Length: 122
Image (cartoon, rainbow, N blue to C red; front, side, top):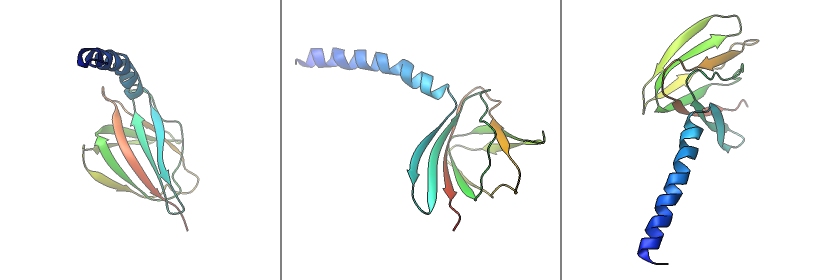
């Protein structure tokens, strides 16, 4: 394959991949990264106005903001609070109180991306 052909193939590939990358960033999702007996790690992409379903965290966790923003945490009771995550910073969140659940909403215009490292209970 000539250098010119390889370059054309690369450009076409990039052109086809761009919509897939855009689509991925516009959909709220949870992507598993690592799990063992001590931790569970995942990447969350929280798209604007696409809330995460109600859930709970049985253990404390570290949040590392890959792409920060404002997140609204809505309790099952309807109470809510907003947290601001700055890109490149890490945050500690305690386990959720027993019997509670919450959903997360990104009210911004850009996706929020975080890595979550949740400690497993012993």
